[in-house]
Image 1 (cartoon, helix red, strand yellow):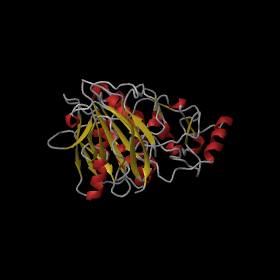
Image 2 (image 1 turned 90 degrees about the vertical axis):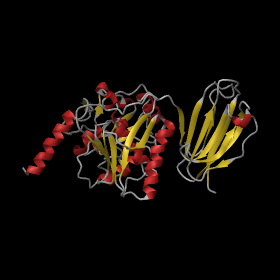
Image 3 (image 1 turned 120 degrees about the horizontal axis):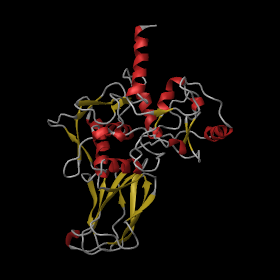
Length: 403
């Protein structure tokens, strides 16, 4: 046997036994990759899935796999570089989590390669800004910190798993990885999150179609028997979820099917989901009130509406539509009136963060604001209240338009 081939084989054995927590094979496959024939129920899933195709907007993990096709890096599950035995979701002594400061903020230092042009730097910064807007994670430029992310354009899109200490490479190749969802996927790995389909409870929510997975990719569909699921629901639309056809060896055949409804879309296309945000906030004990609205149209309202809202609220809604521009219309408004709206107010930004251009400055009282149109696919609504008077709050709706 060629020495190089032998070394790769031995390394794969080492990683499969040491780099991750205990993994379970499905009862559909034995450890050699031999599969039993699909059941009648599986055939039913297949017939339904064969009539469907991926959206024209490519799923995050499909982009990652395309970019990683020529990578020489040894990658687990397609984009994870493993180092030692540990689970970031059940990390001993929290050593693989980034530390939280006394003010509740988790500062993650990073260095960004000068190889990126200004447009790519802007895309990376915007992807990071969503974490800061929605969670207590703040990606900050490194000063002298010992532990930091070294973001550079190597071959492919990949990351280490949780904080490993020292300079930690996170690869975002200039050609193929500079998409918001891809960037957030790799950053989420660095924060200590697994692929969603590897959760210990995944068999209650998805069916793995082993017969359409090549034996060399079977390990990518293992599950972690000791994963910490944070007591939060399974998330089909997570930015950390494989797409339905990831690692399929047969054109048009899905490798992951939602159950009991096989029509449920799998795999995120344009960024963090609500549950992705909730998981970060719970794992890192962030005190945040934040919501992601990522459908082409929808509605939002203050807590308890049309009953009175509570005191001392600090909440944000990030509208992120797939295409066109966000159009926002307020349908009801009843906030405590005050000079310059310093007490309770709503404020709207043209982008993903509070540093974005202001579309609607602090507004209170009962006069409905004008309709608002964002310059792009994102808009941020901020709602702040103090500890004195309250009202019924607000209600608004949004849709996508082309201006």
